[in-house]
Length: 155
Image 1 (cartoon, rainbow, N blue to C red):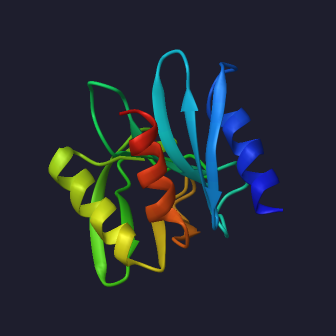
Image 2 (spheres, rainbow, N blue to C red):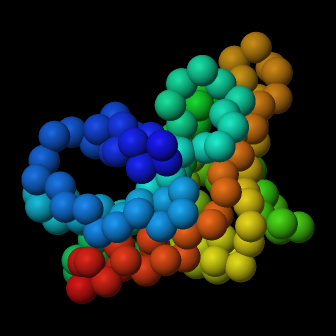
């Protein structure tokens, strides 16, 4: 069931390109795209605060950024609402667009991904358009292995 959900996410998350599966690990999967060449780990939230299809990816590009976090929120956020990712007792502020968010810099990417590797679950919290708080929750079982597979896939 999780593999089918992740496969569906990949179809929504990116345009049709030559895509190679690098494996499914727990609730996470890793893929390599041919053009543009990139590799990424991806997961769907176990529980989503909205009606959309939220997801989180950690992507690597050959010769470019490594292990870069990207979050697609399950619903649009309220203008000026902060987006926070929580992993265990750690909280990180994200930079956000209308329906997505990312780490503000490489140092934050590294800290978030290190926390993901040692965590059991994470959630992404913000306010929806009507000012009602929502959270997209993710299990981290398999995240470290999928992130490593994606990184190795683009060496």
